[in-house]
Image (cartoon, rainbow, N blue to C red; front, side, top):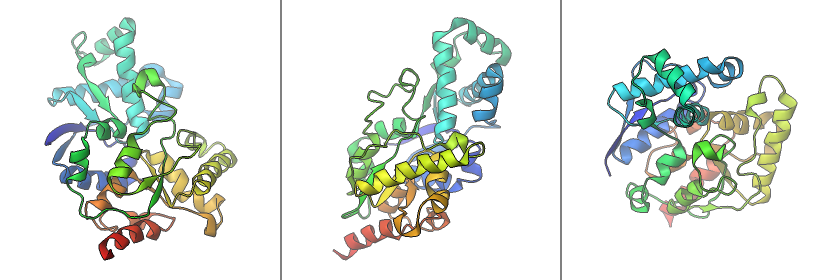
Length: 293
């Protein structure tokens, strides 16, 4: 079904994880979804702003909500888990704390209650609103024999009062997509565990320890690959895996949009898979088996 969303790529999708942006744009086009980038958007503030100045962090997210609303939108798709978290948290505060809402509205010169009408969508929300038929319609070739560990991490599902995810401990949104593409989601223990992204600069040993636990859990469950919907998780589980995992024990980590894109007929090059640090041949080979069979 054709749909239009305000699109908030955030900083990561414009830089270190541009493959996420590229693959999402291709998949959205295949689904007949139009992503209209928010004019003059600002950084969400992520870790630095909200850990130092709460009012600033709220204002940065509020500015994005306001600009999207001024552009005629009521829904914002924020594929970055951190960006989504900042937008969703600000909306939660607007709806639950009248004083904070009034302060933000005053700072942004907005009408009372106007921003409360907005909605922030994560990639899980976006996928959840797609019917099985819509997800399957663009498929050109299905996967065969590919086992996937669906990794949600922290911010896509928590805190539950902000995300609204029904089951924050055992979410199934990505598993549904994986099955519809012909692959098999594995049952494993680390789907919603932290990968340590916030400690990438301050405590690299902890990042290695947490990342290794995620990778080893996926391998133990028999996964051929991990799919993610967070730029920071992808960085840790792809790039940093080359630092904490032996070469013969690595498994590829790719974005859910890249997995969808492969099934929709886009090439690994178009989807940015050549930029991965861990080889992704195991994933593309599962598609090749379908074509031959």
